[in-house]
Length: 277
Length: 349
Image (cartoon, rainbow over all chains, first blue to last red; front, side, top):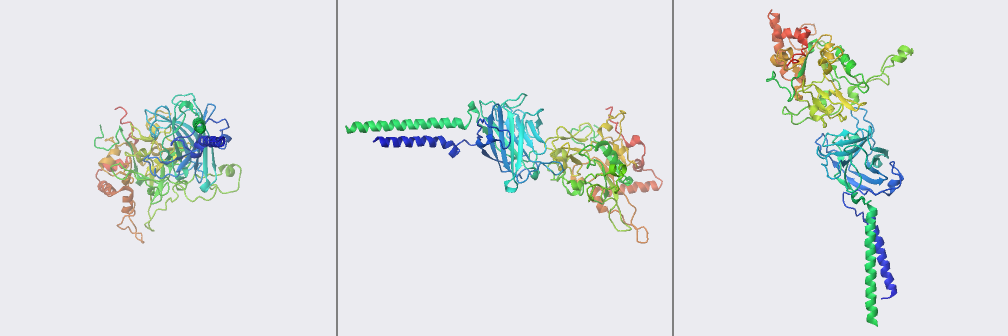
C-alpha cells in the first residue's frame, strides 16, 4: 500500500470521527422520554431570550387525563414542545404549544383561562403516581394560568393541590399568532434548591422525573380536565450536562476508530513491505 | 336518634330545613334584598342572588335554569346528570346607574341602566304568567339553596371543597379549598352556586349559619335573614328531624310541603306548600269549576305528590269551614315566632 492510500484511509477515518461526533444531532439519538437539559451561559429569562436558541427541544405528546370529570376525554392540545436548561443555580423550562386563541380571562361564569403545568416528584428518588402523586409520594407542581398567573403547588393525589406560600417559581408567558399559527410560549424558572419543606431539590446526581399538563380554557378545560404527558425525565444523573457529555463519548469513540484504522493500515503496510523485499 | 324514620344524609346529626308557603308570597323581594344586603354586596357578587324570587310560570333565575341539567340520574345516586354553567346573560348583568351624575351633578338624563338597554335580568318576566284573560295566572317562587340530603354539587367538586356540614347539613363551599373550577355550578340542578370572578371561587347560600348559631353581635339565635325579613312571614325554619316541630309535621306527617323538582333526585330540604288560586271565571265573571293554575304545571314543579298535598289541604280547610279543628290549618296560620323558628331544640342534646 502506498503512502497515498494510507492517507486516504486516514482521511476516511477522520470523516468517520466527524460523522460520529455529529450523530447525536443528526439522528436525535437520545433515549425516549428524555428531555435534554444542557447548561446554558446565555440569557434564558424570557420567552424569546437568546439562550433558548441553543437548547434542543423535545416533542412531548399529550393525552386526556383519566379524571372521570365531565367531558374529560375531550381535550384540545395534542403535544407540547419542551426545552429544559440549567444556568447558574437555576432551572429553566420553556414550553410551547399550539392554541388558536388565547383565553386569558376567567371573569365570566363560563370563561376559563389557558394554563400549563410541570410536575416533578417532591423526592426525586422515587417516581410518584402520574396523576398528582399520592399521599406517601408527593409532587411539586409549577402552574401558570393566563388569568391568575403563577403558582407553586404541592400535591399528594388528585384534588389535593395546595399552594406553597411565597412561590419560588417565576414565569414569562406570551401568546403569538392566531389560528393554526397561534402558539403559547411559557417559561418556568426556579432556583435548583430553594429553601422550604417539600420543595424538590434539583441538584443533579440523579435523573429527574417530569411530566407536563396543558389546559385549553377555550374548551372549558380546568382541574383534571386537561391534556397530560407520561413521565419524562431530565438526564441529570452524574450531573452529566446532557449533549456535551454525549459528544465527548462520541469523540472518544471516533478517536478510537481512527487509532484502530491507522494501526491496521500500518500493520498491513509492514506485512506487504516485508513480503515484497 | 330522633330521626330513625327520616332520610338524613350520612354523617349529619340534624338537618336544617325550611318550608315556604307559596300562598303567602306577594313577590315583594324583601327576602332577596335582605340576603343581598347581608351577603352579596362584595366585589364579584353583584350579579348573584343567593335568594331570588321568580314569577311562575316563567324562565326563572338564571334564565331557563330548569333546562341546564345537573342532579342525579336516579334515586340510587350513583350517576350524576351532566349540567352546564349558565351564561352571564342568563343571570343578567348587574346594572349600573349614574346616581352620582343625576342626583348630585344635575345631569339631564333619565335614571336608567348605563351601557345600553338591558334585555334580561332576574325576574325579568315578572307577573307575566300564563293563561288567557280572565283566567290568567301566576304565582311567586322564592328560591334559596336547598341544602340537599344528596347534594350533587358536593359530589361534582373534584377537590371536596363543597361539603355538607356535620352538625346541621348546611352545604358550604370551603373558600380556601375552592379553585373556581365550577363543576358545582354545573352540577347543581337548581343553579344555586355562583362563580365569583373576582375571588375566583364559587359561593352560595350559607343558610345564614352565623345567625342560626347565634354568632351575631347580640349573641342571639336568629332565623336566616330571608325568613326573618319576610313581610308575610311565609317561611318556617327548623330541623327536619325535630318531630315536634311544624316542619316535620308539614313534610313528613301531612305531606303537604313538597320539594321543588324531586326528579332531580337531590332530596332538597327546602319545601313548598303548593299554591292555590281562585277557580276560573267565565267571560261573564261567573265562577267555573276549573282550576286556574293547571294541575299539570304544578306536577311539573313538585311531582305527582302535589295532588295528594292539595287534596289534603283542601280537606282540612273544609273541616275548618264546617267549624272543626285542623292541626294542619293551625300550623299554616301560626304566627308565633317560637313555633315558626325552632332553631334551638337540639342545643342541649
